[in-house]
Length: 211
Image 1 (tube, rainbow, N blue to C red):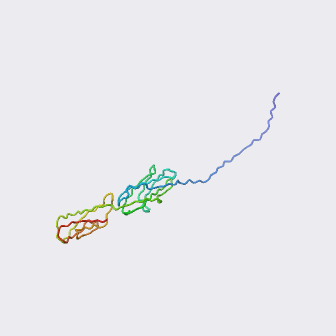
Image 2: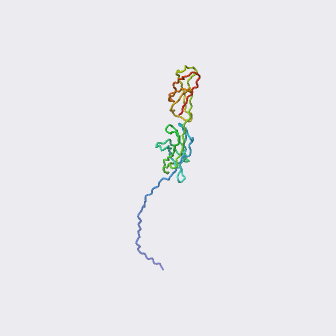
Image 3: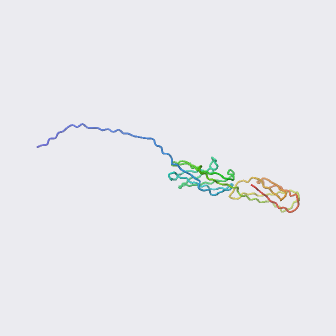
């Protein structure tokens, strides 16, 4: 017996899918950071001395920021110095205790400028105090006073005034020369003044500079 095969027409079914795309805005902000002054090489420093300020920056995720840190003193908008962070997030730069940095206590703040990953920060909440003292000086009489003069006769007394290292700069103020009774004075940079000893006898000539 031959099997019977029945053929039926089946209509095709078409299924269509349309492409769809969804998008939403998302912003990724920089990671917060902190920066601090970690060391001052000379504390206190003296007028005119150059010293190093060390600093460090770290991310709130404990990562290591890159970029530049500026050191500002007493709120001056112009940085006293700036340096680049190394691979460990540390750096340093050199500051000079020049005439604009008078003897006394000064406030040092570090400012980190940020990078592509970490936000800027500063140490203004915990400023570092730094002291500056007057630099030492030396004063010597340079004139040859071995030749005698007459009582009441005027004679010039010269001197040399120097700033002792590590200080530097230009001295200001007055030098006074005295024979114990009579004296003369002139600006330290003048280097000489004229003295007249009015009484006879051996005199001890001294020069004094008080800053």
